[in-house]
Length: 515
Image (tube, rainbow, N blue to C red):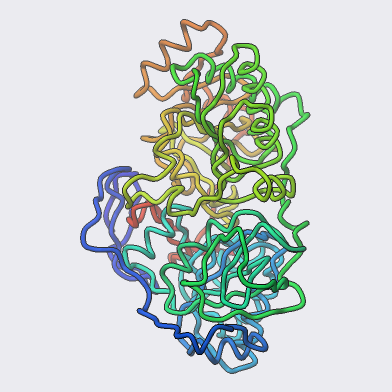
């Protein structure tokens, strides 16, 4: 075991994962070597129709065999049907011991559990929200789940850490030669930003669509030069499932107070000026912060340069109002955003590599002024946990948390002091997802704790006069007194989850629950 720079003991080798590079600091590890990629290919003019009759034929044509790695994207979120269809077909064909490399799995993918138990799926590298995360927490997977951020995932492919044998891309629209779009069709999901890396890096790319249209399809999200086969199915998913989780501004008075404090901090900062760039999550508090910021932008006649990330109707409204010049969209979070990206040239589709990969010539997150994020818990060192719940269960992915926190000039974590009777500000988080070195402030209903490393923000907040400053130690003590003593989580020695920092080093591990 070795103590990494986040203060966590991590082993030098993890069964089912391999050698460990300990986290050395948020910007310490630098890339070496050249970019990895898929196989060289040639398609001659005697093959201008890439359609095959069904998923099984595509699997056979792709060369997929037991022990290989297959990838999927999650733009349809809890409405996705493609992952289950493909793994069902693999099981029927006798293909086993697969590593699946999804950008995220949701409740709809609970149907994979029998395939995990039967050995069709051996390993998962990707976010495991809900039931599959619970299964992993209880030791139900042969190998640890590997968790990467939205930027860490394309970095892993481009750096050669992950080799995709076959990528299956849920395509709301496709033509017979393999041009794909997420903007058109009855299953339209908007941006296909997460799938671009898979199309670039996989040895074989299979598009699964329920809307085959005449060549040439436009506008194109992924073009024909990357796609090997096209399969038409009855349905790739239900777009209504894209809206999984809250995407409405909170009405809860306590959470509105948190949002008000966060907005006051943003307004007091040196970054609240003409050309502001901004990202929030899709949760109720984050959207309430955006609502307050919108009002101040109107009042002070400030126009932002761009809104970033997973785009909601709230940001679409700000674009249409002229409060932002552009939206840069890696994931469309609701159907209003899906419609907007299809119609508005200033609503721009971007890949996850472009969005957040730390190992390219410049991710968009590096241009962010302010980001507002959530967490399941934060600690006295400003570390944030977004992966595990208070009971130690691995139920959430990283998303863009690490990437935006690292890239933005002002990173704010908003959280209530307690959820129920569970403290959200603690002495030490159960799992370190994002290190305190890239978190600038923690905002609760009881005040704003600014990282002592940011004396400039502390001075600006004091000068503004309406930011209720507290220390993080005061918040932790208040949470402890209110909640009372908490029993430590009982775990076994076995590691069931590996949390990578966006550069591929290991920032923390998650152990099997002892139940």
